[in-house]
Length: 613
Image (cartoon, rainbow, N blue to C red):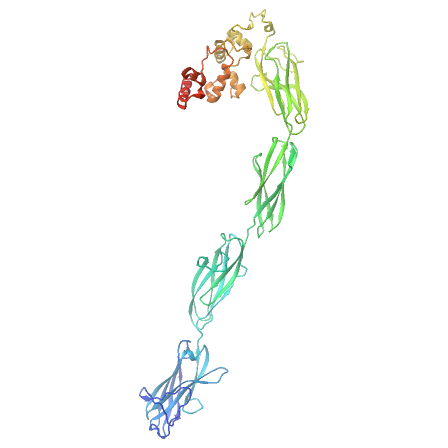
């Protein structure tokens, strides 16, 4: 509140009267009023004094400037006088903004208020003067400040708004109230995520209200998740009701490793080393390190290598592949990163020696020379040399052993040759024979290359059995063609033992062979195989010779195949202790098993299983 003392002024006449607070006040605008000489209110010797002035030192721009005066008439007559309010700003002349006519009776006082409306003032510093009558000198002076309203500015303070995709970006702007008193402002932060040049409501990332005094600042912040933004540039905006601040958010592609141009020799000879390589490029916007994995369908495990690259930098990753243990054919190799992979193929070429058309004796009499021969063909891609062997299962473990009977064979692709071995076996132990002496029993033998084999079985019989004669010491005889062999003859022919010398399991199988006679045309007793022998030698059953043979332990399909092979060795079904599915189906329904309905097949399978209960 501004208070001013008082001054004196002798007054003349006044016009335009208004009663104010018990006094008559004349009103005028824009200058001094002329008072008539013959006015009744004129009194000689009268004088007015301003005893008090009240005005605010600061006002808001929407408030009027009011100067309240207390005017006292110290004279002896009623006096009327114009009171004017003049304003001036720095560097400009004063201007009358309000006037009033004050009529004050002698010895009394009046209150006068002079007002300047808001539209007459703008924000700034003003001095004012109160002038009485026609005086050019102010009776009272003072100053007033018209405050600046709350006005907000925004300034982007984010700096370098560059982030790698997937990390959060932090945006910042300073909001300042440059007005003179407190105000409230809301700041909205938005990112033009769809890059269409507009900021939709759905693109708002933060909105906050701030209450600031004049000259106070605050920082508006927003966090932007970039995982869903494609790499590129995005405009962002801080906005209030009347101002904005904008900037650019740059989202970078993370280090991303692309694999390309995988290469390898198209063909490589088995045993050689193949160089397999690929180009790895960082197509991201920042440096990075990643693991490049090398894998193959043909090898167990993988090989990994850590690679560090700058943006747009490339490197070549190579692996030396040893093909010694790789099979002939095409092998695929792959280089992979977390986000990409590339595959290349390598064809391993090798010779491949197929053994076929095996010839050899079904029955070998001690002392005779055995001749074994087979066709060997290189079905591979390149010429090769391999050792071709004659092998025989002399220890009855179903794995024919090699005894150094070898031929080195060199063949071009598609070329064939016949390999022949002549071997004289004997029951007499002698060091000049290439293989161990053989007992009188059945042996598996074959001709083997590194890749394949051809094998079959032969029976070794005593020399006296060649002509159907007898040995002078034992009195045993060989089996004559067309006759039924005895139990002893069967065990002698197959195992070189008498019936009472074999195990109970072997006796049971020999008995069935004995009961199923006569044998199929062309088969001798030594060539007839038991179910156990068929299962081991033809179908790879895990049964060692001489052990108890559990026929029902085989897969049911293998049982059927073994049974069919066993039955094919005999002319009749007489003495058959096991009937196959097909035999049971023909006996029961007069039809092959495969032609029965599902229900009847189930019945046959149950009847088959009942044989072993």
